[in-house]
Length: 262
Image (cartoon, rainbow, N blue to C red; front, side, top):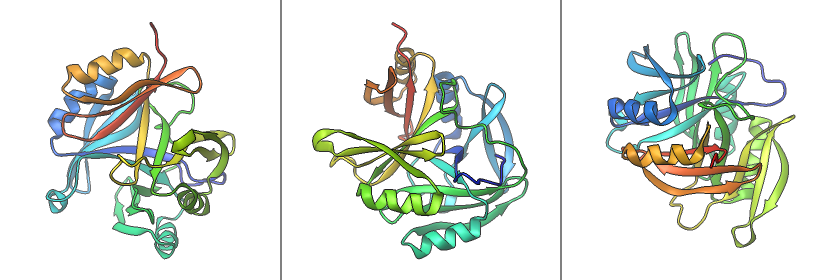
């Protein structure tokens, strides 16, 4: 989780599952994604580091006891920022809610959890150390994350908020008919994902993060074999790829993208 200078805009640098059952989640995702896992402590709590090809891409932790009664299991993306305190102050002044104030975790960095003005939740992190983040790959790389998708309450306002505060650029949009525009966004030369106005059956604005898999159909089979549920897909997406959205056995939403081999 390294890299503290982002002249081209702020990238996603880490992905984290908060869950009600760490042991069960480790078994499910270890089989599903083939991630290797190691155990550390973060802020005095056990933390599982997830790695793909020997590079850290994310983590798993138990939902904190203070939030156990209200928080749902879920995946969260961390956006790297050069100054966490300044970023939180600016976004809070622009309508974001601060769910966790800037907190320093030794050897990790300064982190904070926010919800954008429409309610979608994410983290910012000012990492300690130097070097490129290894969790995101715009090109297929099994086990890494490759797409970050915002289901916004209203696309135009959300796009304006994130481009203003993250330095992201709006790329081309794709007309989805009655569902509106699917807006691609990213950094100079790198597409990070897409944004859209959420559909009526999506209960609240949210981020979805997609991880690369080598064979989308085999991955979908592993979901159901492991006790998860397929919510949507596998469905075709641009680039001769397919995506599938799921919920894991504890109820956390997750998504995968990859080629179809058959």
